[in-house]
Amino acid sequence: MVLSPPAPQRDRRILVGLVGRGILESRTPWMHEQEGDAQGLRLLYSLFDFTHRGWADEDLPKLLDAVQMAGFAGLNITFPFKQAVLPLLDELSEGARAIGAVNTIAFRDGKRIGHNTDVSGFAQGFLDGLPGVPLGRVLQLGCGGAGSATAHALLSTIGVEHLDLFDTDKARVQALRDQLANAYGAERVSIVEDAIQAAGKADGIVNATPIGMTKLPGTPIDVAALKPDHWVAEIIYFPLETQLLAAARALGCRTLTGQGMAVGQAADAFALFTGQAPDRARMAESFGAFAAG
Image (cartoon, rainbow, N blue to C red; front, side, top):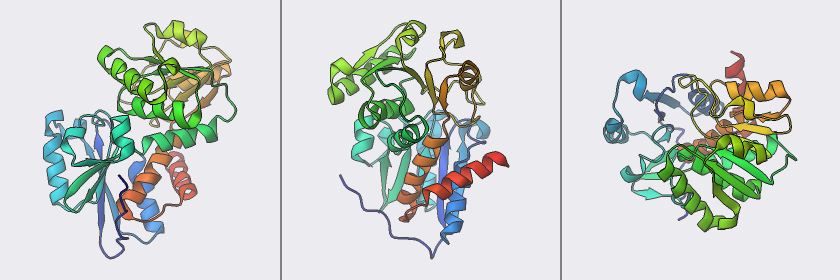
């Protein structure tokens, strides 16, 4: 399904927002509003932090109803709602359907249309930030909504030869493995029971869990499993340097922060919300300015 973007909305206020838990430090509002200002758009970006507001996960349908009635152009969706939101949508883009997760909702003609801009965002950030790294075997930690997107990016655009998946939720990791096997071939993806043992065979490690975020400090794997010849990639961007990345850098590993994915997915979402092509370099500069501030 190919969806045409909305017409540019310079003549009215554009309301968008982010839905998740523990998101008060998100840089997404800043990036969107700065890009809106640069393009002469009256864009207002709101945070709907379920933890801060004391809302239950079951309140998600009520929130979607409320913002749609209020005239929002769309929403970004993050942990823990990227998969939970699926039954609440009217349509899915081809990418979102294939991945089984949504990080962006566009409200269009009374419908809720789910998209996933995480795949392209992660892939571009990876290719820019870790050029030339070995891709023979990669260990991915975490198989939720974000992990589904990174796994698809690793096996498609990035070109990983074999992907090992680890998640404490057995049903979730099995579902993702089956999805990836159907799309890319069973010989290219495996489930591992022991992440530390799998790390010993891997060229690189991707953390697609929320462990390491400000609200969930720690590391998703014992840092003793890291080796200097590993590369380590994060999807987390607050904090920009997680405990895992700090340990990896101390060993001399090549590392990738979550900035590339954050900027890439935000730029694609901006286009869906506004109908305007974003200046990606300018949005990256906005991200950096926020961090410096």
